Length: 201
Figure 1 (cartoon, rainbow, N blue to C red):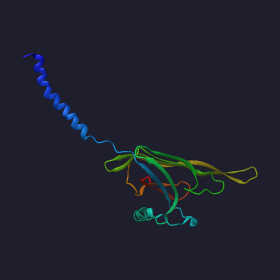
Figure 2 (figure 1 turned 90 degrees about the vertical axis):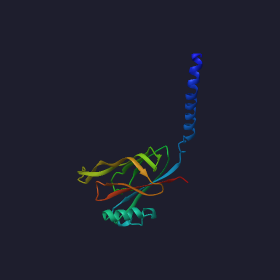
Figure 3 (figure 1 turned 45 degrees about the horizontal axis):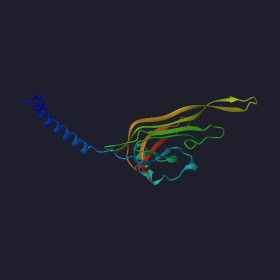
Figure 4 (figure 1 turned 60 degrees about the vertical axis):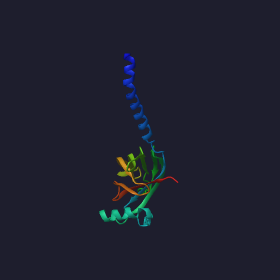
């Protein structure tokens, strides 16, 4: 028998098996889920005791307020600020601005510089997650009091940086999540960061 015919007869069944295996794998492969648009809501709570700022918290923050009261004994929470954004399950979001909402500035005090970001949003086996979350602020702190030429006191300010960063953050959809807390350097108050991610409408 011709040697080439023999080799062909031996290889043909193996070739058929390999082709069938590849066809089966191709049929069972699942396409990655399509990107989804997501609405982001970052709410900043503070323990500040400003009497004029007392107000009821939004209803969605009631579970967070109960958690903080139960675990830390904090009852005088108020909503300092709310930030809105939009991203997708394959993207991220970055925000930078000037604000006085975290700690209202007195006369002559410079503003606070704030930034936050959520990046690397993905769909995982347990739901959504983000590769990184960052929140930071540069807060003015009164450092010294100088005398002007006429003897009038003049304040000087320096900026202190505060912030937090998280790698690999799980995100439950349409449910507020307490991300973390920060102390403000110029007053006896604490910030609590609450993030809510929901499907975009």
